[in-house]
Image (cartoon, rainbow, N blue to C red):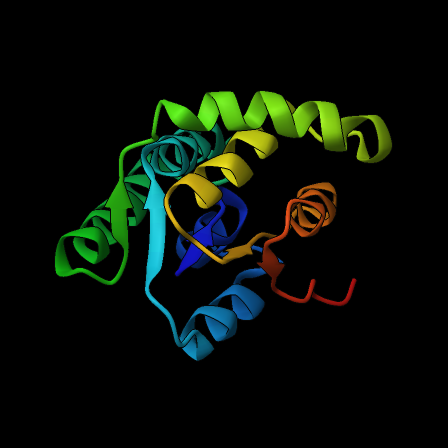
Amino acid sequence: MIYLDASIVFSLYCADRNSVYATSLIAAARAPLILSSLCEFEVVNAFSLCIFRKEIAEHEALGARRKLDMNIESGAYRLRPLPESAFTRAKALTQKITPSIEVRAADLLHIAAALELGANSLYTLDQKQHQAAQAAGLTVNPLPSP
């Protein structure tokens, strides 16, 4: 299974410099795609932040949200609740990884969720999370060229 981070999911629904890459990455995926409730929340919040920053109109954010919801309902993504055990695993990962990689807590929580949900891969656009996921034993996508 492939765990999708919010950075990838956001680029699938709101046009940005990574949208083409994210779309091609997901189109080539050959394993089930999973989202945690944490990822879904982060993406929905990112849509709202774009409204606040006047990067997109409210109707565009609502359209993106509808498309995301439709893909979850159709089974394109398997939405899973964030397991409570992910917090325990994230605490262990922070002691192992953060001193050498300087990764954010939320990124470690995504990595822990991926592991707890049985994913063997994590797709992200975040360089630090990418490094941390590798250190945690997950396979990661190649990062797009700058």
